[in-house]
Each structure stands twice: as structure tokens, then as C-alpha cells.
Image (cartoon, rainbow, N blue to C red; front, side, top):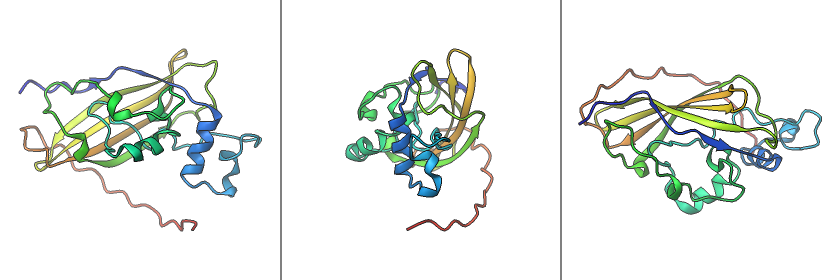
Length: 202
């Protein structure tokens, strides 16, 4: 097998959104009236919910991890990372045709399990994009052989293309079940994170 090319830069993708997308995202994740600034476009502090760049992110080098097309169509409509610059629902799995990372086997994304994510917000995204140019820059920074499962680690940056200013960065991982033992290092075990208990509204 050829040498592993890490980090592996992926082609940048233009992203665009409207206030409608921001509102749909907040409503879908269950924002309550106490967070009205994310749900009402005329609120004086109307803003994009901070986790918008990380929810339902893409695994652009290896394909999409959701295999049910009906579910994908519902989930992708308000997701900025999935919709890119489209204003309609998209069949993301069909449109994704990027090459594999050189030096890795051909993975089956339908047997992938979403892993952890770390979001760093440097600057809040604007509530709409007209008049500005943003792009999603991605690169794979690690692919490890865990024996019975392989792991992908990828970074994504939301960048103002004109100023080159980074608004947010997401580092995420995925387990590819039953797709290990291909002869590469295991890598380090991730740190265990303890989360506070949250009482979710019913």
C-alpha cells in the first residue's frame, strides 16, 4: 500500500446561507423561547446558534455517514455544512465524489459511526451571507488503524474568503466499524470528557 499522505488537504467549498437557514437550524435543535435571539429574526440580538458549524458536519474525504436518503433530505435542508450554497434539499451522498486519502483502503461510509467533535469559535457567523464570500476548508489530519475499526480525524474551518479570517474550526472523528487491520499505527486513545448533567425540556 502506498505511503499515507497526512495531512491531506481537500478542495475548499463555497458556503452560503440565509436567515431562514439560521432559524430552521435553531428550531430543529430545540431552542426554547428563553433563547429567542436564535429563533426570531427581528430580535435586536438575532444571532446564529454557536454550534451551527459542528452539527451534522461532513466527512468529505470518505463520504456521508447517513445512509437513509429520506432522513438525509430532512436533515440536510437547514444544515449549513451540508447545504453548502444550495437553497433546496440535496442528495449529498450522490454528489460526494472526492478521492480517498492516498495510502488508505477504500472505506465503506455506510458502516461509519460518528465520533467526537471539538468546536472553536473565533468569531460568530453572520446571520446571512449576501455580499460576502465564505468557504469551508477541510483537511484530514489523522487516519488510524484501531484493529477492528479505523478512525478518521478531520478538521473543518469556516473562512471569509475575502479577508481569509477564520470564523470557526471543528475537529471531529469517526469510527469505521470492521474496517481496520490494514497495517497502520493505532494512534493515541482520546481523552475522556465528563459532561455536566443537563435537564432537557420535554
